[in-house]
Image 1 (spheres, rainbow, N blue to C red):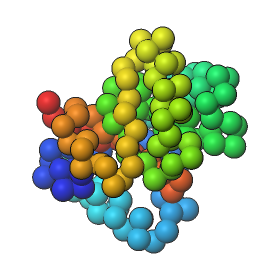
Image 2 (cartoon, one colour):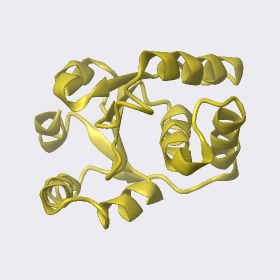
Image 3 (tube, rainbow, N blue to C red):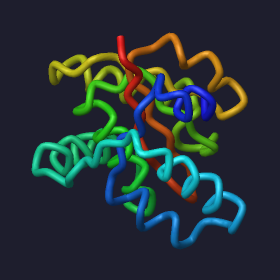
Image 4 (cartoon, one colour):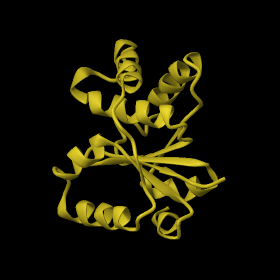
Amino acid sequence: MFRAIKAKLATPLISDILIAELARAPQEVQKLLSATLGWGNMERLEASEEALSLQQTYMNAGIVVQNYADDALHVAHAAIARADVIVSWNFKHLVNPAKIRSFNGINMAKGYGMIVILSLENAHLSIRFPYIHLCSHFHSHLCRVPS
């Protein structure tokens, strides 16, 4: 997946959450993502009322509790950006089949597309999708792959 970004086959979509979480990430993660962002083919996602509303909908449905509100915001950003894939290290709150079904139920009801959530180990599968979103406890960003 990172090779696809470097080859400009995928474009990271960067949210404010990514920037905040990078400050708390281990140095190795910071270096990897800084290099990724330095490849120059990225788009910036701004916080919006739409994203905050969708985040709150996920939390009201009990998919994510308040302590993990950023996880819900990652998914909201991905849904609004029409990301097809979220890539995450967060196995408890995101790379979890029950959570994925719940997120997608709300997304479909609200007119957003389905989202697949993969672990980093399976991210190589994501290059066939038009949009990719990366996130973890430490960082989050989105990627767009040209169709």
